[in-house]
Image 1 (cartoon, helix red, strand yellow):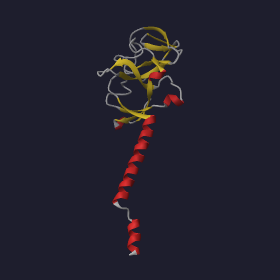
Image 2: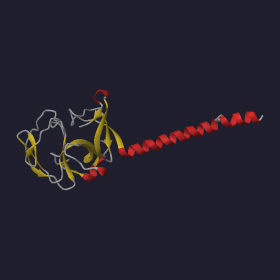
Image 3: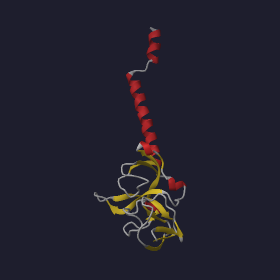
Image 4: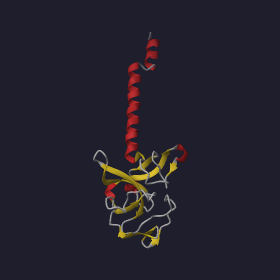
Length: 187
């Protein structure tokens, strides 16, 4: 009889199995919450970042990227804009950083100039930036941003977007997960 008791103690019962299952789910949920504090999955909807990013691309944002580092010219970031979506909430936009605080940005001769120097922008869809924009000095703690598809991008060139305040930054695009054929680090 004692031998049967020892066997019963070694075999987990249904109650113990359920408890272990709940524990494993709780641990997985805690890990997910921890990961989501640092990374945010995001789906691209618009064409303003083509050819770098396309509608239906699935990317990851580093939410804490600027807690531990500085915004750099060329970063692709997501920010809250003052534009409203169909539900009346602030729209998130995705754009590339062109100008940092104190930089002077100007558009002329089908190109963007930063502090008087013409930018080399191989990431733009058409290779040119049409139009003219008088020199603009980027305010302190704000960023001048533009989409890579300049013909359709609603960005800092437009008054309704303007320069982006640092507190509106949601995160930096770091990785494309989908489509699988183009998965990898985003530059």
